[in-house]
Length: 152
Ligand code: HEC
Image (tube, rainbow, N blue to C red; front, side, top):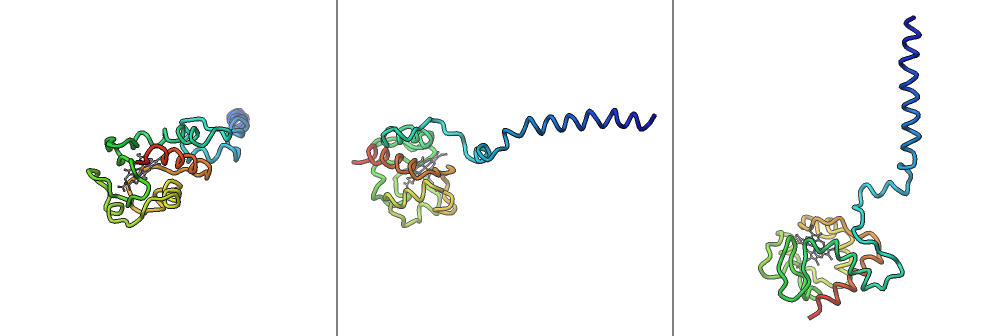
């Protein structure tokens, strides 16, 4: 009698486990795994888009914290007008982290590429909480857009 009870109890559990394993399988494929750590892109970008358009779409990920226009206000991050050729942490009226204020980095295509790829790594202790753009094409496109919009 006891054994029968056990079977009746264990069997539904075991089959539930099997069903749920089967159900989860498609979500644990390699294709989906990296999404957990990378925020879903807000904008859909396609390889066929001209870089400036692709950059404009990708820039939406920076927009919450930055403005680009001359005299634009500082938000969570500093206004980026005339950013190329400027020293990191030198925009007036913005309260930079100590590391960025003290940095001797000059922003150019190379330093910006490294920074937006992984801000936390490029400048340890800086306060830009942005995970980074992994794809080279995405970083290039953002720079095409940045250059166009911030050039004096
Ligand atoms: C969550 C807000 C946030 C997002 C999103 C963000 N930034 Fe920033 N950014 C900051 C902050 C804050 C700083 C200043 C960091 C410090 O003082 O350490 C900064 C600094 C910078 C600087 C250096 C400015 C200077 O005067 O030296 C650049 C360039 C920059 N961000 C570009 C970008 C780009 C491009 C993107 C999008 C790909 C982006 N940021 C996304 C908050 C953000």
